[in-house]
Image (cartoon, rainbow, N blue to C red):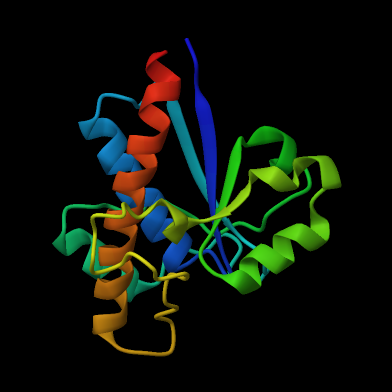
Length: 165
């Protein structure tokens, strides 16, 4: 049975990447692919290791049926480049940080989440980065959810043929 392992990556692992992890876990369960798609998240920085996701991220996510409370912040590690098939960053700064520590032969695993938004999704098609909501209000966390739902749905559509073949 084929499996794929994914690690979503943002700066501190308390807003965007745990939101992407929660959304993806939910969508993977709905698609009956939980045994085939393994999901985690991490941050490029070390400020929030061991901490739960931001309260605002949890509240917004809970409002859409995603539960993030069990997740804890962690920093990306060298072993993650071997462990995961895809390291999916939220923005270009995270891409750059990952490339700095990634072995050259593993760099093809690094992608931007928004690359997976389907072309038919006019709202987000063409957006390059998931917005960082940390210094803003509740609307930023809702936008992160919108972006993650669109991109994670597209990611599953891309992965499904590889997993079923």
